[in-house]
Length: 142
Image 1 (cartoon, rainbow, N blue to C red):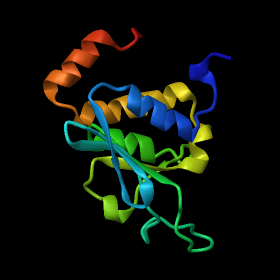
Image 2 (tube, rainbow, N blue to C red):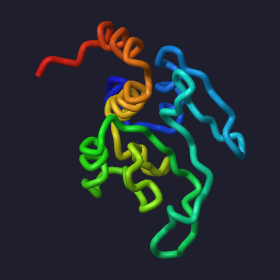
Image 3 (cartoon, rainbow, N blue to C red):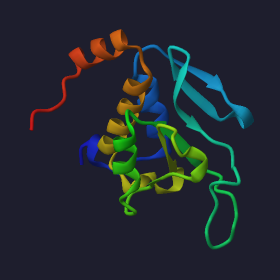
């Protein structure tokens, strides 16, 4: 099975984020990394918060990852399908990001996760950095 077709893992988030150019890691609270490009976060691991809780137990999710998205339409496309690990909360209304539980990343392929991380980076990188990366990594024809 090619590496891009296997189920995604949390380690892939770190690997994929670090593979993007000009990335710096900032230590978030509780030593949860924040991946930034040009001083702007594009992926980070969130502390348990009262807005993201298990509907059955009320327990705060301990494994939420935030991914920036290019537009509200992209956000809606990701969160509308309940079969994906992506969701949002009222706290993130109007914020161009989606949330995902780390424990559900395996519902995505590594290739699908790579697209999400790359789109997150592209949505936060400067126009010149984004253009340079896109010139080296044209989207597949189709």
